Amino acid sequence: MSMQNPFINAMAQLDKVAKINNLDKEFVSKLRQPDREIIVSIPVRMDDGSLRIFEGYRVEYNNTLGPYKGGIRYHPNTEINEVKALSFWMTLKCAVIGIPMGGGKGGITVDPKLLSSTELESLSRGWVRKFSDILGPYKDVPAPDVNTTAEIMAWMADEYGKITSDKTGAVITGKPVGKGGSLGRDTATAQGGFYAFEALKKDLKLGEKCKIVVQGFGNAGANAALIWGKAGHTIIAVSDSKGGVFDPKGLDILKLLAFKEKTGSVSGFSGSKDITNEELLELDCDLLIPAALENTITPDNVDNIKAKVILELANGPITSSADEVLFKKGIPVVPDILANSGGVAVSYFEWVQNLKGEHWTEKEVFDKLRPMMELSASEILNKSKKLKTDLRMGAFILALDRIKAKM
Image (tube, rainbow, N blue to C red; front, side, top):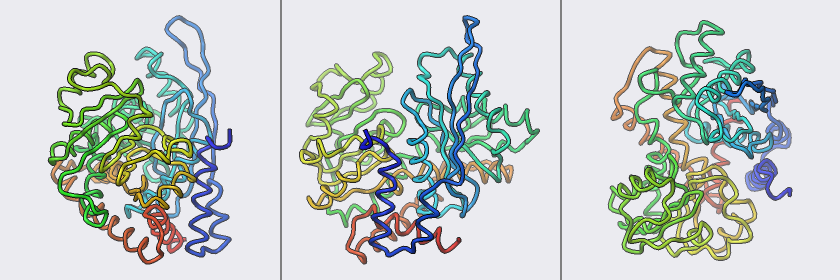
């Protein structure tokens, strides 16, 4: 189904910007293709002695602004079109937040939950071996994404060091803090989203205390629920891949985290009502935060969305045609390339710390992140008002202007 091809969605967004901002054709045609896309096979000796071959990917989209930057995801549905779309969005994300990096993305088609720790380590090191000649602190700098952890990044950085004798560790970001990782990295995506929300709140006509719904309870979603909750907002519903829970009076997020840790899901949390992911998206709330996977708000459910504002912590959670409907309905969307760019900003900070041999405190990290998020948010808001378009197009235009100026 072409509807589900995220790269077609990404290119539809590019065409839309080109129309609004009157971009020249040559520039657009350069951006319609990645610099390179590579598919490799990674043989892994499994614990039972058998050999399995996994498919791995790296797409280097554009390095006009600096080294390619972007995560690696391990997911059974990961395939080349998804990786291409994500690498395109990374290119824009780095430009939006104003860091000197380009866009890339990687992945492996695998369900990591089905592998033992040793198999996972062999697979991760195998990915680096296949790509070691294109990676490097000044060439291409991967990071974690869906289902990849700080531990996996440590294996990868270690493997790269063995192959190339690089001592900086700056080839990979999102490493454990003891191994060159940056403080604040685990909460950076949600924290950055919160800074953008704070900067735009008045313009989006949101009150001091909002009713919040969070879809996805992984790193970004759980941290968002904690951060918004701590700031005095009421988290009325959250969900994970197995289902959701709803309590109009507000959920106790710390208790819910402990519950999920114990049971493996948020479903069945006492004092709350079990709901489906579909029902969760259609709840009446001030702010809906999709923080799971792409394509969750589509033409099939967009008419039932009752949120006043949507903030995308996930990448590409709203399809292009659903976006149009939300704009017509007057539901503003704080787009992924702004809302979740805190993650890549702190990845960039980690890279800088590694290259300089420094280690910043969490306060230093967030003191640097906040003004970056606020500045980008206000520039995007101004662009969208000036061109009478939505915030996503404002963000795209800001990003593309920056790339074009450097090209």
